[in-house]
Structure formats: structure tokens, C-alpha cells
Length: 247
Image 1: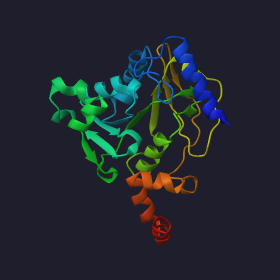
Image 2 (image 1 turned 45 degrees about the vertical axis):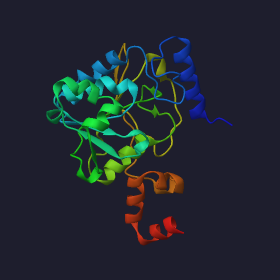
Image 3 (image 1 turned 180 degrees about the vertical axis):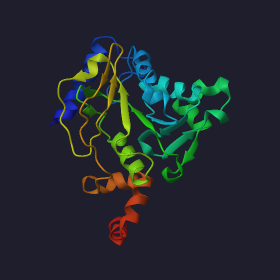
């Protein structure tokens, strides 16, 4: 049986495809969907003081955020980019070490692996702003991802290593069709401060409290073993973790 979150995802993916605003890579089902107007929505975030004042920006590796990643590098900001599914941790991209003619390529996933440096979270600089992809969002700051929980895990891991403040500004750029009236929320879900679409910018007035770290009791063994950073953190928690992972 499809749960409510997945039902909403399926509806958004269907709507974007049917209205002809879904963009490569297609089909958008199962993805953070790319859409017509993604760059205009991104520009609304890039015009904000929160972006101008940021020195280090973490941006998701999804297609709708490619323009954000490119602008970060073009504007001389340090870019932190999680690898897909956190399979290889985080990439650190310093535009001063990238040929200017390669900045746009470096903002792609393939280019980021060439020009970025795989960096353990303990060695990352402190991050000033997060820009993430979303499948859906509400005007009061609730967010729905594609279902893997990776944005939430990235946030929690960075908290564990004291690389972000719990109340760091989190923004997303989505299509207007991805705005919904309500979303269910789980304890680990992130909340948004800023939502940008091709036609509007929404600054959330009353952001709900976010998780204060990894909620271990909601993670299964497979997820912990899948992500090396999680496994390392779990082992470090206490001696009981070693028994759990080695039994």
C-alpha cells in the first residue's frame, strides 16, 4: 500500500510530466524533478542577502540545482556537494583551483568528481547556507524529498561534526506546481526557510524545529552499513554499536 508521502510524490511527478514542464533527465519519476524555469527559481535565491553573505554553500547534486552550483563557483564561493546517495561522502569544490572555463562543467556531477576533492565531514569548512532539491513543499516550510532521506542524513551528519548551526538557512527551488497545501511530517524531516519558484519567493515566517542530530532508532542496519560515514559515527557512539554491526 502506498503511503501518503509516496502518493503525493507520484501526483507531483505525474503533474509535471502532464503539464509539459518536466525537463531532462526524464522521466522525472523517482527523482528530484528538473523543470522548466529552474534557473529563474534559483535566481530568486541567488539575489538574497543570505546567499550574498555566504562564504561556503552546500548544494544538493540534483539537476534543478545545477545553476545554483555553477553560480556558487562563478561567484567565488566554496561549494560543498554531497555525492549521490552519500556513497562517497562529500565533495569540496574551491573555484580558485578550477579553471574559469571549466566552472560550468565542475557544477555537474561528473565534473564535480573531477574538480572536487572528496572530503571527510570533519575536514569541511563551516557551512553558511544549504540549498536542497525537493519533490514538494508547503508555504509553511514542510518539505518532501524523493524518499531516500539523504538530505536529512546530510544535515544530521553535518550537525554531528559541528559544520552547521541547527537553524542554518535552508532554501529550495521548485516549480509552482510542486507547492502543495499540506504534507505529512516525520521526526527526521527537514524544514525550509526559503522556497523559490519561477514566479515567487516565499520566506517562511514560522519555521518548525528541526532534528538535532541523527535519530538512530529510526535507521535500519542496511542504511547504516550502506553509508560509510554513518557506520563510522555509529561505531563511535558506544561499545554496543560494535556488537550490533559485527554480530
